[in-house]
Length: 65
Image (cartoon, rainbow, N blue to C red; front, top):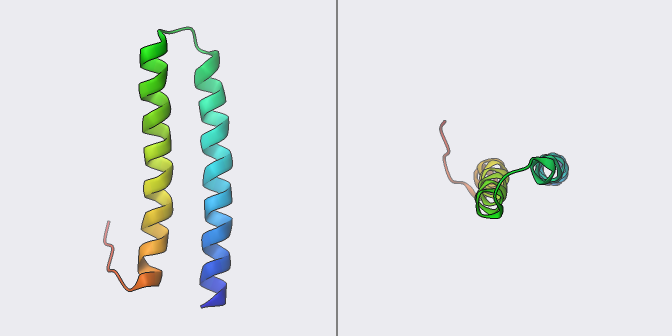
């Protein structure tokens, strides 16, 4: 159980760092502010979903992809 929680924390940190880097790269691209907001929101949504997919089996929820 402890190994699973440590693994979840490591995954959350890695996904957060990757999402932050991608968001910073998107900020460098010249496009309209509205589109940047939508892209940032989609990046955060994907990052949260990745962490949730890893966390749900710890709670006993069957997740099949």
